[in-house]
Image (cartoon, rainbow, N blue to C red; front, side, top):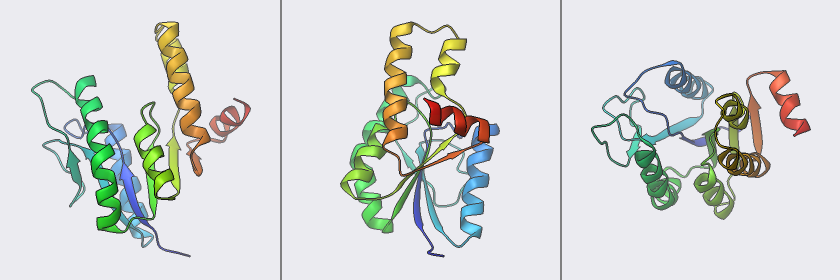
Length: 167
């Protein structure tokens, strides 16, 4: 089996160690145990659970805000090509979110496979939270585009996989 050089791209806040960040650390450790080389690209934080992780953006005094998230994705647009060349990455691994557009574009430009991990649909979460229907519509289109342009989709359950297939 070919060993991969993976750039794991996420926008989680590692200053608050929770189930999401613990899951990311566990996935990376297991990918490395399989012999793959993995570099984590994440927003800037005080906590770096993965040695040699790459932190982009800056930290404001507020918890990881929408502004910080947008700045991080803008930084990705410029830094991702650099890290692809530096690490000779051949695969992207992205945790599903509505702003996956930058990794999608860069993956297409570099002809790199894009693996998307889906643990639930963002649109359904927004509907439950009774978010404005215009925002739900925008996120639905972004989510659909992100899933259609990925090379591989990994889901947390077979029911979620079947749900995604029917959408």
